Amino acid sequence: MTAKTRARETPAPAKRPISITAVVDCVGVLATGSMSGQLYLYDTNKAGGSAGFGTEELQTKAAVGDKLLWNCLALECEAYVGIDAVVIDPEVCEPERKVYPGTDVAYWTGIVKKLPAEPVPYEIRFLVGTRAQSVPTTLSPTLTG
Amino acid sequence: MPQQLAIIVLVDVGNAIADGTLDGNTYLFDNMKLHGSDGQGTGGLVTAINGAYWADGSQASEQVLNWLPYSLGSIPPTVPRGYQSDRARQTDREALAELDALAARPAAGADTAGRLDKIRKSVGTRIKTTRRTSGRLSNEKVLDVTGEVVGDLGTGSYSYPGPIITDIYGEAVDEKIMYPAEYGSPDMVTDGWYWSATVDTSRPGSYAYTMRIQLHKLVVQDGQALWHPVNLTCTSSLRITSEPKRNAFTKAGMGYLPVPMHAPPTEGYAGTDAVTESARSTG
Image (tube, rainbow over all chains, first blue to last red; front, side, top):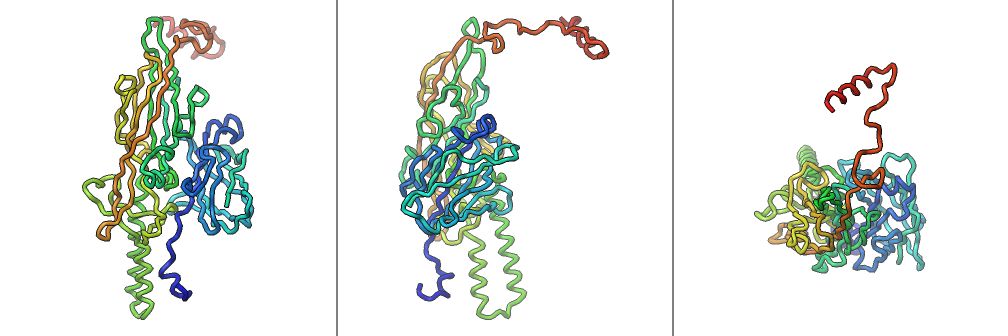
């Protein structure tokens, strides 16, 4: 794997992306206008050391080069929730919105570019129901190195 | 007490398969926090079921439970039904179009091998269908968590199929507190099937139940990929309370609602009189 031309043909085994899933009580958010108490965050890196599962302050353990993927689920299957933005220090990660091919169901994804020693807090803004303005997280989930 | 209550069973499939247990890898929700349920979003959910009874002690309202199993970190259940099969067909069509383009320009020389290799990757890996996996998981390819086909299974970055509840049993069922069964459904998010139960609220108490959940791990056998079923169980419980049926407006016992029996006639609106007259004649 020294020659650059060979790299494309035999890629090194990629790590499984870390999926961060937000479970949102849509009706609760619409009633209170806030994410506080209405949000449960999880990721798939429990074995790697993530913590704070089921809280609003999920601490996702990540490493430089990891692919992160954010998506969300509504607690009531009839309700709509989506992610409007993932706001994080662009030096750490630049998440962008993508859709599953052939659908308009969106997810946000980005590669961890840099991770300082201290946890990096970030904000997720949610689209809820037919509300025009997105609702930001009240407490901050973090990425930790 | 709402008549229908959904219990979401969110399973971290990858970790559950790696650990060989659902303990610590399952998160349950029933959205009844304000009605007394405990442990939302954890593996220790206690579902509060607030029943009501009539003056003679008989059950006054029905409680129906529905279970919705989801996979954490997979393609979400909100994509259209049959998405995995659609993607398999779509990528086949794309690969055929690329082959067609390659055949139209055969003089590409050394580049042909590279282009063929690219087409091979874009075709992805089709899941072998066995007798056990025919049906729901047939005609699918291995997709990654962004919905793209996976050509190289060594990367491990594929999306697991959603968990499937195959049985609900235990104390709450043995004691005839709830009567679970699997039903067919036109609901898109449950893939056409769901588990549901009616609950007897006449015997208050805490009752545990167990769900048998089938996950699928990808195995490669004789060069072919197939989803191998992994059966695991997880427990939860119901906490049933019951109180006399009461009038939600007056907070008192059951009786007439505090509204006039006959609406006063309104001038200039013929419809009101007609309705009142009709009510008198039938009453």
